[in-house]
Length: 124
Image (cartoon, rainbow, N blue to C red):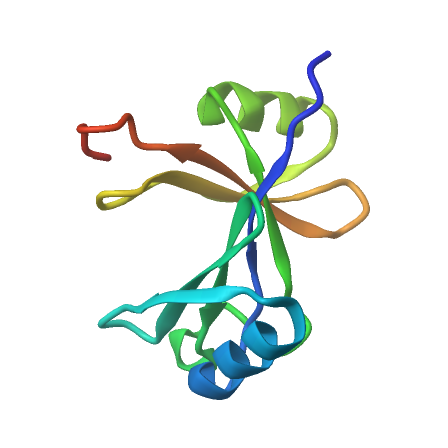
């Protein structure tokens, strides 16, 4: 089986600007952009990070979510369910970026899958 990388991490925050400054100063993660929603992207080494604001309602402090790369989210979700996991959010487009899905592993941890949009293509 191929080992897959964590490609994105989400760290919920009450203050996105303070979080961006903290992670930039401590780890050198560069803030990429603040989105129109309460969410900020950052670059961290070979992966990206996101600082979702608590106003979005899907996160609370401590709900750090790891996104694992996936070539086929639907197939991975079937494998997850077959092995005792539970799908929380099915494959969902992120306009211009790719697709994601959230799941719970059999021990109760919330994780996610991510597929990049093809370059020059769209997610939809």
